[in-house]
Length: 180
Image 1 (cartoon, rainbow, N blue to C red):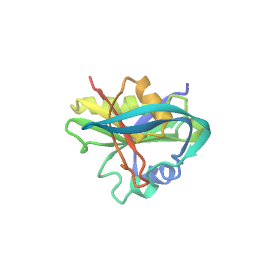
Image 2 (image 1 turned 45 degrees about the vertical axis):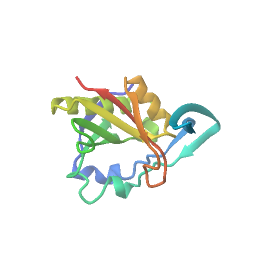
Image 3 (image 1 turned 60 degrees about the vertical axis):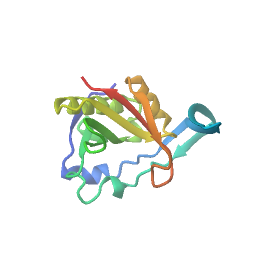
Image 4 (image 1 turned 120 degrees about the vertical axis):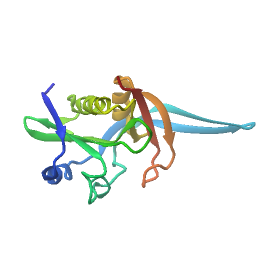
């Protein structure tokens, strides 16, 4: 596993961050099933294996993530491997009371599955705990099985969903855990 340094993003990082491709490939997804039976509404998610791996587009465009005030309205943490930017996490303090909300977690394709996403999540947890937040929520598409697996591995529990949450109408899943 490479040594990962995490720091707050700088305005000069924008040209590098904006070209990182956030799409991913997956062979599994969480499928949502709904049922209405005698006044009861039930929603279930089940993991399904796809017949073949598929490429999934990220639900947010770069212009949405890196708007005009990208460093003023949210917190960005940047991961560096050998002094090269290898990923970022975008955090919000405004989504829910006393909760750090990880809206985006993106790692360059060549550096995926090397612990960089884990390092960014742990750094975000530390950042939140130092500021008195009580929990952290990570949001992701129901199609983002790599992120679902990572969140669960790090002790996050499924805490909800929102149908048609993203502009592309994808379902958002939310995973939450307490901070120390």
